[in-house]
Image 1 (tube, rainbow, N blue to C red):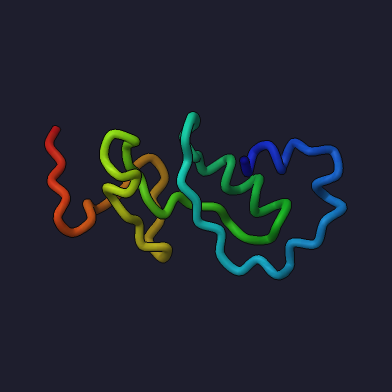
Image 2: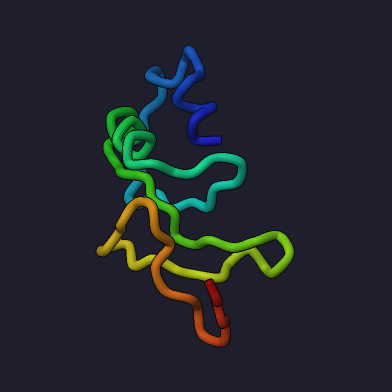
Length: 85
């Protein structure tokens, strides 16, 4: 959805200054640092994945600390979640 907003021809006509933090969950594509940087160029706020999960579970298996975003990883399992390789 964020990529669709960025690709919309009128996206730059909107004022995003009220946006303070933009966390998301992604489905269909991986959120990359390049997408986050592009979003920040449009809105002034970086974009990061707060949680990762599977539809087979409950869509939030891991959480990311907004102050320690590391693209390409989903960080720590939430309490009560066991993840195996």
